[in-house]
Length: 413
Ligand SMILES: Cc1cc2nc3c(=O)[nH]c(=O)nc-3n(C[C@H](O)[C@H](O)[C@H](O)COP(=O)(O)OP(=O)(O)OC[C@H]3O[C@@H](n4cnc5c(N)ncnc54)[C@H](O)[C@@H]3O)c2cc1C
Image (cartoon, rainbow, N blue to C red; front, side, top):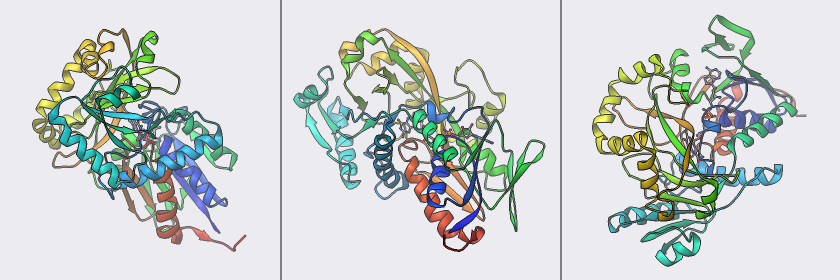
C-alpha cells in the first residue's frame, strides 16, 4: 500500500485522467488537482475535434502509437461503463489524385503495423457506399474511429476524483514548483500556496507547460508554439451529407491532419481545423493579441527556422484563415454537394505544440521526469484519445516504479 501526497497541476483531460488513475491504483494517496480556471477542461480538452483516433498515422513503437491504441480501448470501455455518448461512426482518409496514392498506402502500412482494427483500402465505389456524397480515387477506411465529447469525459473524471476523496482546487494558478529533499512546494505569484507541500507532482499545463517547466528549473526546450485551428459549423439542413469523418491525405511535412469533415457527438457537423500561428496562447476569439505570447514566438529563432521551411503550407493555411469561402471550397473537393453550403464560425481550438531549438515540431508525446516532478511537455492530438493510457503509464511506470521511494510505503491493508 502506498500513501503520501501527490499534486497534479492542470485540470485538463490529462491531469484529471492521471489523478483518477492514481486514486484508483492507490486509494490511500492524497491527490490534489490545481487548475487556474473556474472550471475543469476549458482549454484544449474542450476545443478539439472530439475524435477518438484509431492510431493510423503514428510511427510504430512511438508513445503516440502505443498510447493511442491503448487509450482508445480504455476510453471506449469507460464511456460505455459510465453511460457517456460514444459513436463509432468510422473514418475515411481520401485520396483525390494519383500523386496522393503512395502517401495513402504508406499510412495504410503504418496503420497495419500499429494493429489498427478493421482498416481497409477501398476504391471509389466503396467510398460512395460508406459516404454517398463523398468522392475520391481511393480511401483508407477505419471503421472503429469514433467521436465523443472530451469535455464530458473530463467532467466525469472530475466527479470520480471527488467521489474517491481527491480534491480539485479551481481558480489557483501555480507559478512554479520548488523541489527540496523532503518534498515539492507549489508556489503561486505571491509565494507558497497554502497547504501545498507534496511528495510527487505531475504537471499537465498544456499551453503553459513550457513556462511552468522552465520556471521550475527544467530545460526551456521544447517550447510551446501555439497553432490555432478554426472550425465552421455546417448549416443543419446539410448535416446528412456526411455520415462519419472524412479526412484528406495529410501533408507529411506538417504534423496536423488537415481540414476534415467531423460529425460531432451533439449531431452537428463541422469543417476544420486549419492550422495557423495564434496571436495568443488562449486567444479563442481571434480578436485579442497577447503581446507576451506573440513576443515569445517572434523572439524564438526556432520559429523563424520553422516558418522559412514551411512557406507553401503557411500560404495554403493563410488562404483558409482569410476566407471562409476558400476554407469550405477546399473541403468540398471531398464532398462536392457542400460547395456552397452556409456555415457559421465555431470557437477555435489552440494547439499546445512543442517546438525544438532547431525549429522542428515535436511529433511524439514528451514526458520529462526529474526527481519528484514529472512534466507532460507535449501532448497534441491524439492526446485526448490517449489520456487514459498516458495516465496508466504515469501512474504505473513513473510513480509506482520510479517514484515509490518518494512516497510512504505502509502495511498492506
Ligand atoms: C484544434 C484541436 C483539435 C484536436 N483534436 C483532437 C482529436 O480529435 N482527438 C484527440 O485525441 N485529440 C485532439 N486534440 C488534442 C487534445 O485536445 C489534447 O491532446 C488534450 O486536450 C490535452 O489535454 P491536457 O490536459 O494535456 O491539456 P489542456 O486541456 O490544455 O489542459 C491544461 C490545463 O492546465 C491548466 N493550467 C495551465 N497552466 C496552469 C498553471 N500554471 N496553474 C494551474 N493550472 C494551469 C489550464 O487552465 C488547462 O485547464 C486536439 C487539439 C486541438 C487544439
